Amino acid sequence: MAILLIHGGAGTIRERYRAAYAAGLRAAVDAGHVALTAPASDDAPRALRAVLAAVTSMESNPDAFNAGVGGALTRDGAVELDACVMLSGAGAGAVAGVTNTPNPVLLADLVRRATPHVLLIGAGAEALVADPVPNEALITEKSRAALELWRMGAEEQLEQPAAHGPTGSNTVGAVALDDEGHLAAATSTGGRTGQWRGRVGDAPLPGLGTYADELVAVSCTGKGEAFMEAVTAGKLAAALEAGVPLEEALRRALAGVARRGGDGGIIAVTADGQVGVAFDSPHMAYGVAAPGVDVAEVATAPFVKVLRPG
Ligand code: ASP
Image (cartoon, rainbow, N blue to C red; front, side):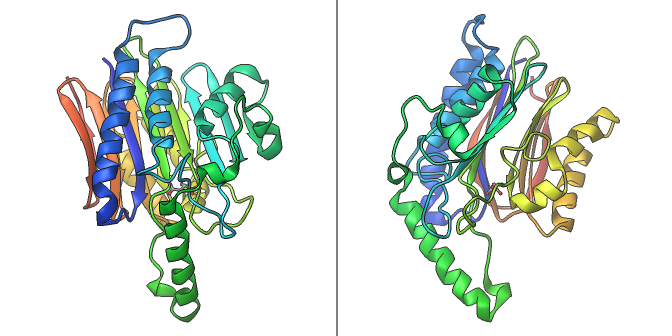
């Protein structure tokens, strides 16, 4: 069975951006689905090609999403991108703090394929970018406006901490199962609007924000610090391995994040073809392409859902 599941971040997605998010999700689902259902080739498993196609589509979208082009800005107005790719039986690659490419997910896959390492940061990762771009090329009006909002919120926060809400949805991700049983996961993020320079979240860290093994592929989005401390993706995989049903494992994963003061969303696909989507933030952008299922939407009320397509 071939299944693709994507997310465009969980958090607060302002109403005026929702149509652009829905269109961006649709384009990414379609791009990923084409790769997932193309003829098999020796180059790369279709699950991997599908998650890379879906994530690069969202990274390159200047109208929606806050990864790649339009990535969330640090407090001093720079874009620092993190990404991870993981493939069942073929390891992980990741980059963090990258400032010179719109598609850090492709750089993460290069680290996986072409280096003896899993994670490269900053200048070391940037040196591998074939066509570097200036950081300003990654900044959009929307990301500037989000930083302005954050600045206003941060000022308010000094007076009234409870008034400062979530800083938006800043991550994109995809998980896929292909006809040959390969599972792949990819996540790409600008981090959190207003973050310190050099801050790294859960997205590029295998087992925290991104994970794939022979049983499940997982991609997370939300307050990275809480997802890191909760070891979210790895614990979800461990729960499934111990026989916990996917729905319960997703609930436990979000509860673990909530206990550490965070919220957000998780997508997961299992080797036996179950599709899981869960979030407890105000909104989550997600999409699914599977036999009999075709979704691309911004969900506006939290849920934990498990589908068994086909
Ligand atoms: N998890 C990401 C991070 O903390 C941000 C997000 O998903 O909104 O970097």
